[in-house]
Image 1: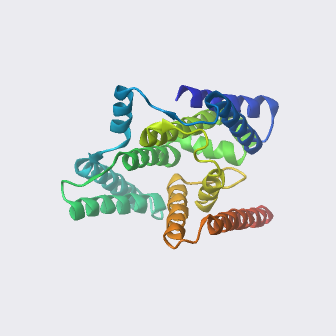
Image 2: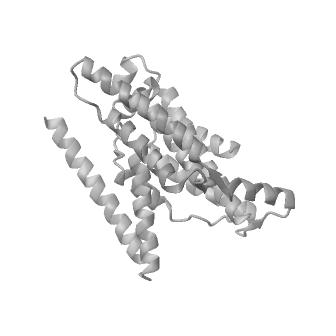
Length: 278
C-alpha cells in the first residue's frame, strides 16, 4: 500500500509541476514500474513461503461476511435521508432530486436482499470491500463539499482556482486515492493467488478505461459517477464471462472493449461540443 501511494504521489507531482498530460504520465509510470517488478522478480512468480503470512492472506481475501444487520442499518439511513430530502423539497416547492429517489430505491433494494436471503445472508469479502468503498466514494462525491470541489476542479481548474479552491491539493489527492485503491486491489489479487505474478493483469488497462467511460466518466473531466462506473465494469466483465462460456475467445472481447471506448469518446466529444455551442 505504501508503494502504491508513493506511485500516486509521483504521478501527481509529474502532472502538477511538469504539466504533462495525466493519461500519458500514468501510462508511462505503469510501464516503468511494471518493468522494475519484472527486473526484481526476474519475470517469475513469487510464492508466499511463510505459512503464517499465507494464512493471513487467505483470511483477508477468502470467506464471507454476514451482511444482514449492516444492510438493515444502511437501508434505515438511506430511507431517513431520502424522506428528509423529499420533505424539504416539498416545503420549498422544488422538484424531487434524483439523489433522493436513489436513496429510497437503495433502501428498498437493501431490505429486499435481507428479505430474500434472510438474516443469514452473507457475501464474499472482496464484494463487501467493493461495496463499502463504492458507498463511501459516492457519499463524498455527491453529498459533501469536497465532492463538489472535486467535480469543479475536473471541469474547469481555472474557474475552481478563482473560486478559492486549492486545485493542486485536490488533484494530488485524486492521484493518491486512485493509486491506493489500485494497491488495495493488488493486495486482494495476490491474496487470492497466494503469490505475486509480475505479468498478471497485463492488458487489463483497456478494460478499466472502457468501464469508466461506459459509466459516464468524461475524458475531459468534471463528470463521472462511481455507481455508473461500477455498472460499466460489471457489464464488461459479464460480457467477458459470456464470451468464455460460448468459447468465442479473447478476440471478440477486444473488439467489444475497443468499440465501447471509441463510441463513448465520440458521444462525449460531440455532446460536449453541442453544449459549448448552446
